[in-house]
Length: 107
Image 1 (cartoon, one colour):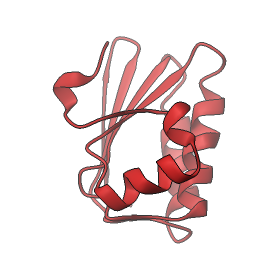
Image 2 (image 1 turned 90 degrees about the horizontal axis):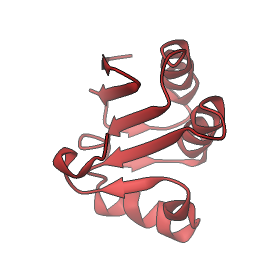
Image 3 (image 1 turned 60 degrees about the vertical axis):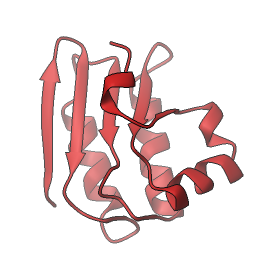
């Protein structure tokens, strides 16, 4: 799995290099994120390359959010229209913070 991780203070940024967050990669992505979250309360995931997400991908993101605890938050940056639609249809756009550009991410 190709994914760059950068940690600054209590924020971890993930930049996946893959185009699909689906059953084939979701578990591995979830484990990689959880492994790096020990000192973090905010996870920023750059979805700019993600063209497709399925229920396994959504489940992985929910699991990572739960792993952050009550005060934790996940911001999803630059989701494709199709990915954003999945979050809107499932009302998960009310759980995850979706932004168009990384400059919109609040620290």
